[in-house]
Amino acid sequence: MSRTRLLVLILGPWPIVAASLAVSTWLKSDRSAPPAPNDVLELPSLTRSATAAEPTSPRARPRHAAGNSLSDRCQDTAHRLQQKLEDGGRVIVRVPFVIAGDMPEEDLDAWHSKTIQPAAEAMANTYFDQPPTQPITVLLFPGETSYNLGTKKLFGDSGISVYGYYKPQNRTLVMNIGTGGGTLVHELTHALADFDFPKQPDWFNEGLASLHEQCRFRDGDDGPWVEGLENWRLTGLQQTILARQLRPLKMMIEADDFRGELEGTNYAQARYFCLFLQRHGRLAEFYERFRDRHKQDPLGVATLEDVLGISSWPQLDRDFQKWVLTLER
Image (tube, rainbow, N blue to C red; front, side):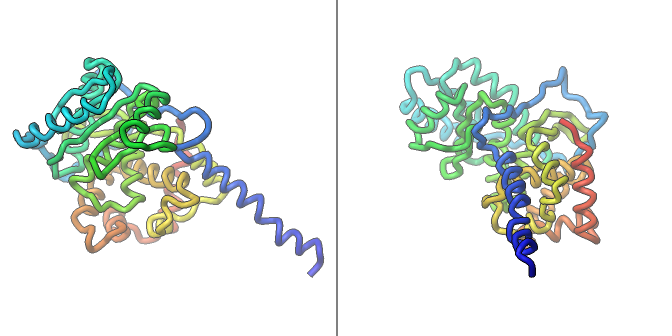
């Protein structure tokens, strides 16, 4: 073998690897650049979408009323939280939610009425059978400075996502609400799903939650639902596809490295696959069937094959990637 050919074989793959890592870095939610906003788009009223495929709920699920015991637990949680907050902190109770932040009570109530409650009702109608049985605490900080100070003071946390995060051990959402209401709906999805489908694999847990980063609330034939929209994760995903660096869907689902080096790419791929399912009217059906047969199908592969009628995973990859390249922000 010639010396020149040997150098090509050794050095040739590095530009491809570097490009792949660069795209994955772009897709990560914690970038050094200012965070891209995650929004809930407001409409004049809840209307049926004329352009997006509406999900078909397997059945309409009424929201269960909270009992007095849950209300009492919410009040106890609010009392303890108020003692931990500075004088400027405010706390309101909207069962099952305890909502707090360094902003006026009317602002906290507006976040509840315009974002938290509509999202909870839509997800209960479309996905979740089991309502919350414990208080869910929502901490809203208006900007990155107050968010960093608050997370450090209350929990000793630092270096967490610039957007916000969910602490499942105490059912608490900690939000830099300055990044947009979509961030709140993302983390709220985790909190509500914990009562209904607590053992979701990472790819679907984050795919469904990330779907709601950029969203709007709609009203369909079966009731309210949350419509996922294109967001900042699209650009990097399309670049990865064009560079032929996106691994197959089945590999992403079955691998145990969702939060590894390709975490950013995995988030984007999972998010847009959930959007793919939603736009084809299969997401609600997949959620229910996957939840109900999770013990037999812990990753959802067999359920996807049934719901989508998959006869060829490579063909599904081609269809999915072709569809992603047609999307625009």
